[in-house]
Image (tube, rainbow, N blue to C red):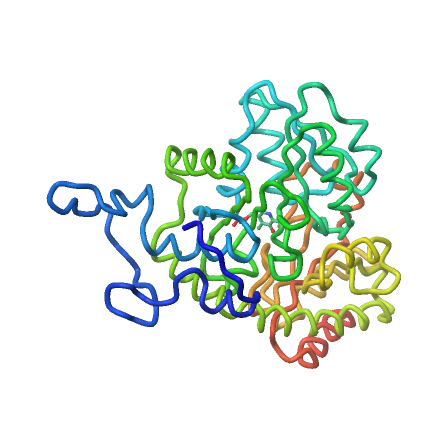
Amino acid sequence: MEKKNFHRPATILVHQGRDRDPATGAANIPVYLSSTYHHRDGKPGEYDYARSGNPSRDQVEEAIALLEGGIRGFAYASGMAAIGGALSLLRSGDHLIAPDDLYGGTYRLLTAVLPEQGIEVTFVDTTDPQKVQDAVRPSTRGLFLETPSNPLFKITDLRAMVEIARRNELLTFLDNTFMTPLLQPALPLGIDVAIHSATKFLGGHSDLLAGLVTTADPELAHRLKRFQNALGTALPPFDCFLLARGIKTLKVRLEAAQAGAEQIARRLVRHPAVAGVYYPGLDDHPGRSVHLTQATGPGAVISFKLREKSQVPRLLETVRLPIIAPSLGGVETILTHCWSMSHAAIPSQVKTGLGICETLLRISVGIEDPEDLWDDLQAGLEAD
Ligand SMILES: *Cc1c(COP(=O)(O)O)cnc(C)c1O
């Protein structure tokens, strides 16, 4: 597994760590639907029992390690299983710092599950390094990050966070789902553990749940492997096949979607029904300059606020192209009402305090023709 690969990202995406079946030369790694592996002559071979490892899973685990610059990758049954797997590096009695503007499912894990396991969590505005430093206690062991944040696209300076973490001996975790390793390789910035909900852009077709984790630290890799095997949260072989297939086209999909998103964002800004647009691709986005020091593009997801609450149901009833759902990163455009869908797990007062209001929508731009998308959205914005 600990292979070096000096190819550029587009090539790694297509060929990954292994690109053909060593046994037969088949152009794709087969779906190894076996729970257990024969011990030839009674001796254990490379594979033993599928929970511990199998060739279908090795393919995607090697792919994420190569893409992020890790020494080893881990594939999980969902993004949340990946986050849970990564956070099992913390122990009872540890304190974790996390952003106040966070994916709803992660918020639920950090507020409802970790405290019951003896891990205390403090939520702070990670866009302000001083606030992060001030939240550090003697028991602080971890710093969990997400940038751009979801759904308000606040930008956290990852280099400043790594500096604080090193000064205070904290482990840094980055949920890199929105940017993918293509736009924002996390480990080269000094992040210890990069996490992806591969359900989104890496899978790319809204046809599977998956999560990926990687690290460049051998000791952390060893512990992650132990937990993944002990908990049995790994990604099943057929889903590994789908994910490997999705990863091959990440670059062309993401570049097309991002180009569409840049057009849609600029048009939303000018539309009279829209009260505000949150997207790091816009010149006046407050975190844009920091974002561009750590990522090579703004991505393909935009949030926007409507002027009137009554416009929300009219928009959702009128649009025909986007799937109206809580997800992102598919080839098809996905429109989310954050309040009731992606952030439903966050209590109303907390959402309001964070600026997540009932008129906020998030659009994950797909790879349809942006002109058709805009026509459709415009009809929704102007419906009465
Ligand atoms: C979707 C998502 C997750 C959770 O991933 P699942 O695959 O749905 O479990 C975590 N973080 C972010 C930023 C996400 O968008």
